[in-house]
Length: 448
Image 1 (cartoon, helix red, strand yellow):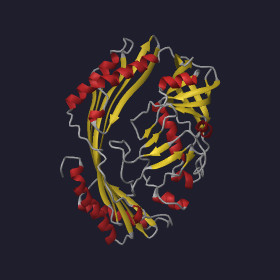
Image 2 (cartoon, rainbow, N blue to C red):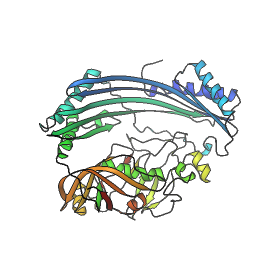
Image 3 (cartoon, helix red, strand yellow):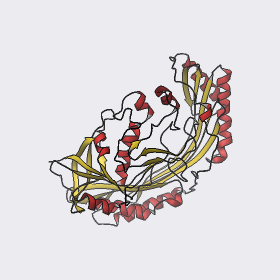
Image 4 (tube, helix red, strand yellow):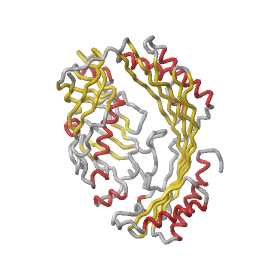
């Protein structure tokens, strides 16, 4: 097999998937689907100027799911030789004989499968050698530590680069592949003054390595963020406005996405049960799913079942327009798939009127807590109860007054969504959810 991992491997993986599907038919499966993939990557970490790790990874795999009527069996293998593929299919068929019938099991509706496959520019090679990767990580960390003499310690700078290619096929005749890449440079620094120590970080990630921030910029920002946390204080327990910085606002929107997912809806395990058509956010809030963004971190013309993706308005004027459904959850709810098996495809959250930047949002808040990092997992997806450790900065008169640590912010996600007061134009483009700073009218801040 070739050592390259790019679009040129798609025909090879298509042959592997086709063999698995043919074997499933031969063994009597009424339906089958298979997914084959190849991945390779380089990971390098430098700490205090010394190389800590240089790791090269290479993975491959095949997953096969078969259906005998409404009985389902699945198996997987990392061996892509024909004999191993046939053996894996045999195991999936054997498993299916022991599973219970499920009226909602089966492949996606053939009429919903993708038929157009645009080039979304998701795959970019970065043929960087280990020595060059080490040098880039070292320069990144050095630039950060040069920000201030109190940055004597570090958790290191890491460069990760990876490419993969995936082919999915099923017995409805769908067979397509996509190559993609992801490149990341990150830095974590520790500021120390006497016995006080604080860590902070920054990172850049992109499909195309030419779109990455400069390593010296990443290091500098990490250093500035770490130093800014020195002198952090606790707060008295109170209720006050809270401003989520973009990198943590993404997680808040992620809780909404999880709550309207098909699995949570049909299991009735969500605080937004039956939310379609309901006002969940203020009327100025608009959210759009955009699967076809060039170089998008969550772009794709089809989902993990081969269903075509589409542009859609997920939230209109604060009202939830629908759920995120794969074929199985759609059938459980008596609906049709939205092309979201496997997840969301680029969610864009519009800034509020006037597109306020970060400084404008601080002025609008006046007095309250700016959250830059969250800790813990205190989020109950069933009740919506929210309680997480937070660090950030206390704001007075629309400007930063002092850093804050060891506080907990708490509320209920339903109330928090309704109390969104503004959304900033400082959009974080580094993930599948693109949102700026998010200002909430009030939360409980538990401190001293």
